[in-house]
Image 1 (cartoon, rainbow over the protein chains, first blue to last red):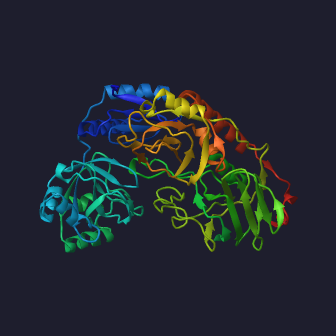
Image 2: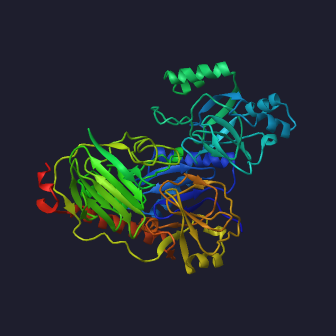
Image 3: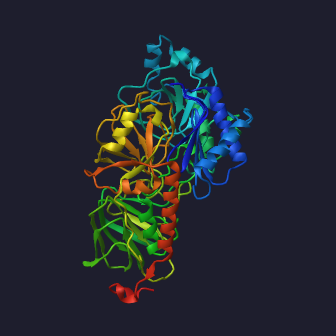
Length: 241
Length: 323
């Protein structure tokens, strides 16, 4: 059955899902972010929360202030007038120490792909990624743009604990872990940056629509970045670019 | 500083407030109480602001002492409560004085109970909330379940009478109402008929994150994988096993299973409170009707909270010496 997009779907009695597609696509993601931006810049009364994901925007509302039926009409109008630009897109340069205890899968993954580890690192750090969404865990970034040769299925049995800084690959996606936890993804390195720190004035490093690239660094350089973060010098943009 | 000393406590007790709002876009789960009306009533009965934090427990309460006089109330359902061995009742507040032991037994007709204390549990807010999120170890008391030996700081409270409900807060016994979608088009008409036409059993496989239901397998015609999208409390996810998974307060913020329907907001606390092993039935409701039910329930709750009755001063053993 062919689906017509966009469509506005009910997520219970206090949220609507504005679905723009059923695939992962950069243009679609740009539209999702643009719609969220439009609703942030010019809010609709009663809208409490906007949740951008790969191909849809969830709009949480208070039915005592606006009813779903009326909100859907307003959202439809927003979509018709939507100007999609990349003006709000930020770029982050993420330092990565490849391999090591956290990047435990680097060598096995290189062998699986018939690459040397330096070729794999070169491939992984040569492209720009798009943050499609933040979800699953606080600050966890789902990145699109992974070179096809690095696409790798998840492990059959997840590992019990992966560090918060781990740089991962799961299927077609790349990731940066934000909190420690179990994961079935493969991990090839770690970053001294922390994507999520509830004690920081700005707890979250990334948001949907951002662009990131990875830069190989030595242990020493990573330690310097980590120290400057600890000293409070760095609230991201300053040090990152 | 006033402290609540936990001498014994059930296995699933946490600090909760109204929850962490507005951060789902950053991957932060709302958390908050499993049964919002019971939580709000508990706070109101001890004169707290709605924002105050209280204890949530599953099954068994525990035993508690305090370092200074406070008022307390237990809500959620029917439960045996003893103040130094003397029986007292849920859904109303009492004084708890230093030297006295408050013992809360097992909930009889529900799953989640609340212990509110005047002044509220004054742990440091994290990302704007004192709610514990166990999955990520955020908020509450050290981001974890409470255990015997914990000392929780309580806020200062102004003196006030103990309070009771003018009439009991009753949970209806009607079917659990669901709004179809957002991925109901992944399921055939027959399967949706099964959802509405057959009973499901509330599984013991449940926690603050999700509630599993046993029953006829639900199969998606369009597959059990979607491009991950946002979740809601009450989202009914259908993984490839065909077993329904209802997302609860601590849910992950995004998920890759199709969601056949969403439990109406008014019925989610009711589902949370169904004892494991009992059967439930689903009934379909329109989004519009579910909104009306939610608005109606909020108005009813506001009415109840605005019409609490002051108990006579001598209604608490030794209560008259407080304040």
